[in-house]
Length: 415
Image (cartoon, rainbow, N blue to C red):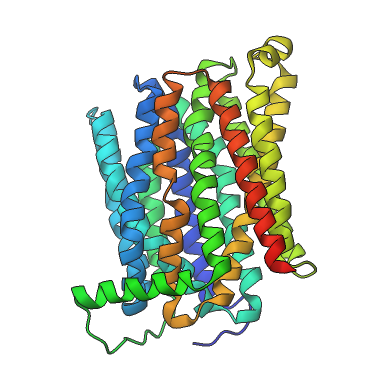
């Protein structure tokens, strides 16, 4: 397939498609919690929004892995983007026709989640086929970096457009971005080699079983997957549920500050992804994982502390000092997350044989992200009953305990 180096034609097309698509998706997903709140949605509704996106995606994940090992991965990516474009454009039509409703948003979110469930494993599995194995770490870091650059632009664009023009134009832009992504991916030169085995129900479940057996036999993959099952269940809702609700109900900043805060947050992810790309050349990936886990634990606890009423009373809910402190903790939290996710993906790619790649990644995604929809729903329900600072403090303590166990296991297996 011609892997000339890290900057070959196929990888450039792949990155272009991903960045365009990620920019549109980030604009839409970042603003949706605020849209739901402005439509009268409660914390439970915001949790349901994340739940309805994540559950279909996770249900599709294992089957998408089997399909990705048997069918043309480029076609999977292009088809998923085209269907996602149709959904986003449908939402734009509803918005412009003044027929937007919370049930419609939740229902179409299910379909978008399913499409991402097909798209994500295919893109991860595609990377090892676009670059040589020795460039995998750099390629993964580059993919993450460009996704974050798109995310850095998205909050400022989203808030500015939403305030001035409404949500319809955001859906329209997202639909166009999916179309452009599909076009870019369509030009990738990809020589698919079809497997000669049958593609029926029994073979699908046999492939799933073999992928699960492969993971069960790899202690590192198994440990990391279980770690993220617990941690992501408690961290992902911080950004999707807690933060927008906290900003709208406890703080007194203009909406523009929310977009700026999201940009600062994603700046931490950018620094983290670039840092992994540099550190991977000098340090062991396990060491980067340990540092990321420790930093994430401290940041999570810090989020709970600054939400305390006494802290808000001292610093004020609209002062510059409190805003800078909140941004600093969010920056550190997202930086630490990247210090974990990129090394995990690279380790799994190195330890997985090509013929198992899609199955392993889809099942690892299912395991590691399986707690996220339940976490989002649980956070939403708890926030309707308990104060935000209590929920965040409990989450921070649980992350510290889980990370301590994980760090101990990693160090034990490294000796």
